Amino acid sequence: MSLQYMPVVPISVGFGLKTLTTDLPLIVTLHHPIYSADDHHSGSTFMKEVIETAAQEAERHPDMVVAGHVHDYQRLTKTLPDGNKVPYLVTGAGGYHNLHRIIKVNGENMITPVVFEDNDGDQVTLEKYSDDHHGFLRMEITPELITGMYYVVPRPQEPFSKPIQLIDRFQYDWKNKQYVPNSL
Image (cartoon, rainbow, N blue to C red; front, side, top):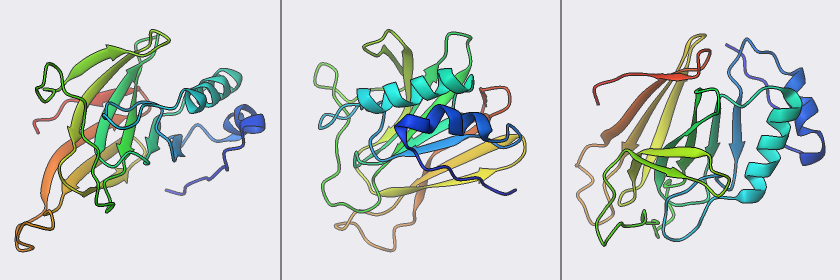
């Protein structure tokens, strides 16, 4: 499967999205996440406006949005008005020493899934997160599915012999805009 790249320039994003093939998933990558449940940052309303405007102009919403900046892992899902689901991933726990914690509710860690509404009333679900370990996301893309596997690695104070650990696995049917149920 070949990939197509398009630089993100706000003035022409909608036109650029329209010109891309629909035979491949449209994965938009950003530095600043549109949504984040961490206690140090918030989502970028500017980037949300850029992506939403481009999606309206192109009559096509991205199949997935991947960002960094926040130093943790979060898998969020936006539910579109037509019921379609779009994964929004925050994958910023690659090495910066100061990991960013997810906000607490009444002093307790959130138990996922957690559903909330953003400032525009859009429904977003925090599906899974890791805020206490560095890690990495591995994605496999086929003509039908995007499979994501997020692994955490030992912290500096933990033995390096401790194995990496898979903490999130998802399969996303990008053509039908829905997750495939899994048992992890």
